[in-house]
Length: 241
Ligand SMILES: [Zn+2]
Image 1: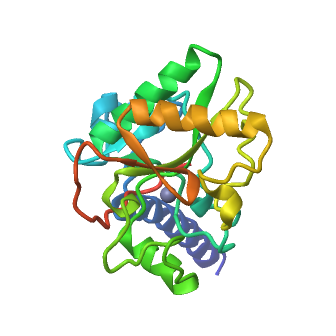
Image 2: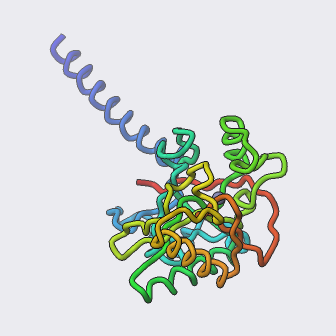
């Protein structure tokens, strides 16, 4: 009886150990990481870290992640948070993609501001068309939200919502918040303090110099007009924490 118990205990321990190993193996085979964080510790016998270029998970002939071009650009992608006019998270993560030429133009504008100790902060970049459908469902107001059947320039990767920040990341006063729906957000609205008008003109002149055009109703929105792009609904994985 004693030896039977001993054998049974040994068998149980061996089985439990085997389960842990197979669970670990399953985890590895079921969900391989798409990127490897450079700070992670890796076992000596694991594969070497890929070159940085290998971890790019998008077609670079079609898209450019903005912060990969210039990591000093600030992001406050509101649709990746509940801090937006619909109060809902619409993006899985805060990655800012644009068509490559548009991304280069934003970076050029940002670098010009850097010479003055300022910079750009992006509120929105490329917006997948499926997100446009969600926005339209919640707020079907032409003039503020583009009809997803025709799509917006955001859905084509050629529009940005942005503002200017100082060296501490503080936004310059633009008179209204981002996504303020009312006359005070219009470029033509002039019943604002001089500093606000100066700041808006500064953003507009800078973006126009780098190939963007303003729209009437939103001081924060600019379209890159050098090229026309197709509507898109691509999405990319979120970085592994
Ligand atoms: Zn916009």
